[in-house]
Length: 356
Ligand code: COI
Image (cartoon, rainbow, N blue to C red; front, side, top):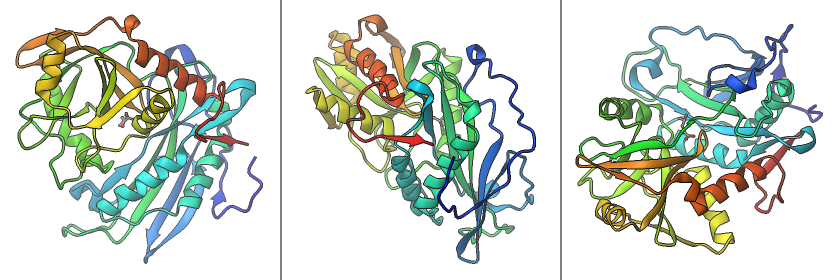
């Protein structure tokens, strides 16, 4: 349990809602633990900081974020480790990214030390909700939104920051079929693409729906101007093994800086792999697909960790990728990350935060 002096109150649930987790049928993001963290930004400061029982929100219909989308979020995970320990994976990276998102969306960053304490305390309180099986995790969702009751278009003066937690199974059960999108755009240069802003996800849903009607589970997004260069895949960063090189689009203001992306690049470099973060053109990818040089393609993100891609569609033609079982790099890193997050290998990069 937390022993240090916390800057927020804790109101514990009188009776836990937990009646066994049924881990075999656990889906992503469908059940929520007993407690949540709440704080309000009022009169220029963060106040009303509290852990309370998980409950519904009561909001005015005029609440500003509903109308104008000043809303950001994060996603991070905790895992059940050997000897019953619970580890969070790189929470400081998500806390830092949420600050970047807040600044871009004209919102007040939440104090980083209290953020980390809130995460640790929630996990400690709701430890009984931790799923244990490999592939499962506690998915943690911090989020913040503007709460002014006002219909004028301006940055809200008031905000709510919250953290909820969801014991989750894997995000994708099978490899995905994706289509290179050459009409719609996820993010334009100078826009909000590198922030984890709710609206980025809203805008991606219609193109994703059209692609689903053609049988594709996800899109590979391309640059907003000419659709010549690869950017992201669905809600994830994209990585490929072309020849023997691990290739991923370089960061820009249209690409979200993924924590999983960064972790994989660090580990791959440590393993001595050839890694390239650079502009990746659609032309190059299609050529590599045609010449059998594209050996692996996968999305990387917190929710799925590694989402294998088995088919890439481009201009009406579907290219099949090598069998997932034959993918040396992504299978190896997937196993390593699972072991790493559960404390089964050395914490070489200082990524784990153990929960007391
Ligand atoms: C992730 O891959 O972690 C995401 O951002 C997806 C999430 C919005 C469910």
